[in-house]
Amino acid sequence: MRLRLGLALLLAVVAFVPFALVVDWTREANEAIAREAREERADAIANEARAYVDDELGELAHALEIACRDQAAAAEGLLRAARVDAPTGAPSLQVAFVLDSPAWAGAGARPLLALSDAARTAMRADWTRIELPGARGREYLGRAWRCGDHDVLGAFHASAFLLRASTRDAAEISLLAPDAPPPEGADRRIVRTFRDASGRDALVVAVTIPPATVGHREQASLELNVQVLALATVVLALLLGLLIGGRLTRPLGELEKAAQRIGRGELDVKIDRASGSAGATFSAFNRMAEELRSAQSRAKRAERVAAWRDIARRIAHEIKNPLTPIRMSIETMRRTKQRQHPDFDEIFDESTRTVLEEVERLERIVTEFSRFARLPRPQPTALDVREVVAQVVQLHAPGGDATITDTSPRLPIKMTLADDAPRVRADRDQLTQVLVNLVQNALDAAQSKRGDQGHVEVEVAPTSDGGVRVTVSDDGPGIPLEERARVLEPYYTTKARGTGLGLSIVDRIVSEHGGTLEIGESRRGGAEITFTLTREGPGEDAEASATS
Image (cartoon, rainbow, N blue to C red):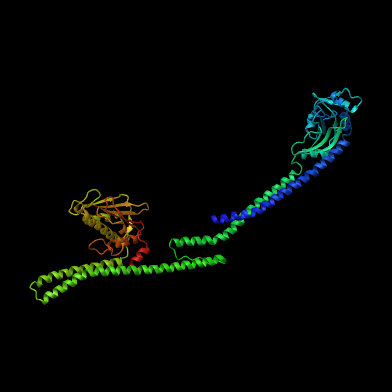
C-alpha cells in the first residue's frame, strides 16, 4: 500500500510540473490580456469623458478657463470650497461638480466631478441662491448656490456611459492640479488642460481608474478556471497513479505475501503465473520455492538417517556393555567346568546371576527403545492435573501435600497446587509417565548431592492462555547450560546407569500434547524443568503421529 501511494504521488508530481508551467504561462497571458483590456477600457472612458466635458460641460469649461487665467477671481472668493455641487433646485441630480479649496492654489487641490448616487441624496438639503461679488460680468460664474456652509457651482445631466464606468470601474472624472499624483497603480488619462495667464498648466480634467478594476472579472474568472483545472489535474494524476501503482504493485504484494509464508515455513506456496516481467519473476519464485521444498525434504531425510544412525550407534553401545560381562561369565563357567574346579557350583551360581542381570538390562533397553520408537496414541480426557500430580507425589513420598512435607525416610516433596488451575484435555497415563520420570530424576539428583537433606518441589499453576504449567525443581547438581539441549536427545544421559530415553520420551509426550518443555536452574541451584499443557490438548496431527 505504501509503495502504491508513493507511485501515485510521484506520478502526480510528474504530471503537475508541466501543468504548473502551463498555468504560469496562462497567468502571464491572462495578465497581458487584462492589461490590454484595461488600456482599451480606459481609452474608451477618456474619450467619452472628453466629449462630455466639451459638449455637456462646455459652458463650465469655458468659465474655468477664464478663472484660471484670472487669478484674482479665486483670490476674491469667486470659487470657494465646496464638497458637493447642487442642482438648480431639483433633487434628481445625476452629476455634481465638487470643489476643494483653494481651487488652483497647489498640488493638493482636487475638484471632483462625482458620478455616484450619493450626490443626489446629499442634494435634498435647502438650497439658497447666492450672488458672488466680483463676477465682472461673467454671468456663469455669478450663478452659484449655497448648500449648508458650502458654496457650490454647476449642475449637469449625467452620461449613461460614464455612470456605468463609475459603477463598474470606480472611474472618476476629476478637476486636479497638474502635478497631483495619481493613486498607486491607478490609470489616469488627461481629458482637458486649463492654463493660467502665463501659459502654465493651472488645472486639468482627468479620468482616473483604480488598479485591477477594468477586466478584473474576466481575469478572476480565468484564474478560477485555471485553479479548477489544476485541482482536476492533480486529482486525475493521483487516480492515475493509484491505478498504475496498483497494477505495478499488485504482483509485488503477491510476491511479498508468498515470501512471508515461506518465511513461516510454508514451502507449499505457488504463485499463479502472470504476463510480462512479473510472469518471469513469478516463475523464478515458484522454482525457488520448489527447490526449497526439495532441499527441505532432502534435509529431513538426511536428518532422520543421521538420527537413526546415532540411535543405532548408541543402542549398539548400550547392548555391547551387558554383552561383555555375559561373555566373561560364560567363559568362566566353561573353564571351571573343564578343570572340574571344586567351587564350580558356587562359580556357576554367581555367573548365571550376572548373566541374568545383564539380560534384564538388555530387555530394559529394548523395552525403552520400543516405547520411544512407538508411543501409543494419546487418549485425551478432561482431567485435573493437580490430582495426577498428587498421586505421583504419593507414590514417591507418601504424605506429601501443599503444606506438610513427608517425614518418611524418602526425601520430602513439597507441592504447590494453585486453586485456579483449569482442567485440560490430556492422556492420564502419558501424563503420569511424564511426572514419574521428572519426579524420579529430581529425587535422584537431590539425593546424589544432598543425601537425606535433599529437597524436591512440584508446582502447578495456570497459564495466561487458559492452560496449565507444571514445574519440578530440586537442589541437586543441576544441568549445565551446554547440556540442557542434549539431555532431550535419545540415549544421551549423565547417569552412570540409564538408557537416556526418559527425557526424550517426556519431551515427545509434551510436544504431542501441544505443550512446551523448558530446562533451567532452580532457586536452590539445582535443575528446574517446566512443561505446559494447553486446554485443548493433543490435536489430530499429534495423535496420528504417535501411531505412525
